[in-house]
Length: 325
Image (tube, rainbow, N blue to C red; front, top):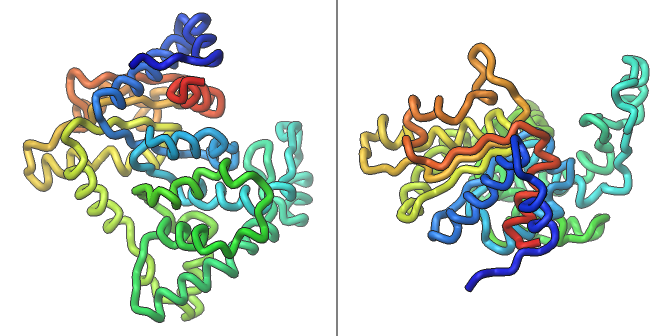
């Protein structure tokens, strides 16, 4: 049965007719076509999408099962939860382009770590989570258990220990929606996040063992098994930004095909990237999708889209289209 599209979807179909605007509509329709044929979809989150409050719409995409696995940086993993528990303490700095080094230092002294126009409050965000996540890490270690970074975060969210701090509607947290669904997730390079740094500090102090946290190699082997088990109708790749959040998971296909010699492994069935990175000497984030054919990631006929724009503008519009808004 044909679903009725809402005013946002109708607006972009009527007015987004050329250039990046048209690419946005084509990519949204391509994503929807993948879901309609029973394909699964991976969404990768780079940059500071959680601090940009993408969770307000991504959470509903998760609840409606229009994404089946997420790859994200450690920052996006934790910053959605930080926004959940410390939202009123964030400080917006709309004139951030005018800040001097002295202005930046003053923010540091106030415990405000800046991400473009938004400052994350160290005490209410980082430290508020630290006391609870450390206990979960320690309890697992004492029980001889090991988990992935996101699994520890899911445990913390589902335990209810953070409810006392909630400052936004829980339905706007994509991490809570993911935890409720036990959504498959990979978080490559988690060690460079704030929580990763904090975990490393406990290892240095001898209070935790590094082995309590499952590694990036284990994330890749998990992803390899998940891809193999879910590729019957295709798996699409929707990449927001660049970097490791996208680079890591897309490599699972050539790894399975070339290194594991599983030559029946299907290529990614759809590819879209939202990025303002330009193609330059050796730039991967700015590389056009066709380059990925040479690396055994995409097929000749894989639907390919690149939207050269701001992901904080584009991603909510595409998700709104998928939700018939």
